[in-house]
Image 1 (tube, one colour):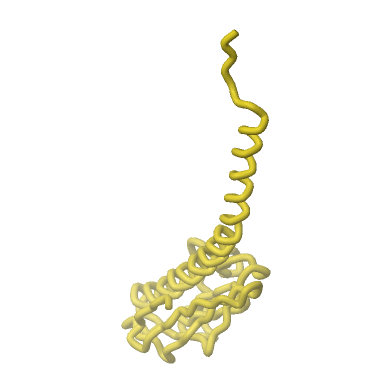
Image 2: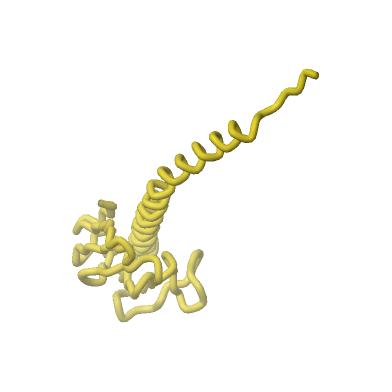
Length: 149
């Protein structure tokens, strides 16, 4: 009789090796997922801030970027002006960046873009993961340039 196949011992060795590898890789994947979520939120915040700048330039007005938790509102004609509603906003003009329990956004002050795209005052936004306290910073220069650090 010419039987082919694997013995139980061979299968258990392969499963054991797979288990050890999974145990070694799991923490790295978890860390990567947290870092990726933080980086994605910081880039999304930078995109929304740039949207405020583009609206200021295209509508020849000032636009204030207000951040509350992980919600952002854009107001035309300054921080006491009209709430902007458009693509990506809900009925109240809120743009949501992420799940508030997963990330937190803090800022030094509301950034206001002029009709030429300059920011007054320049500002810094910090995106923080409350679980591991990792941070990314979104910086708005006085020229209006937005960068993620």
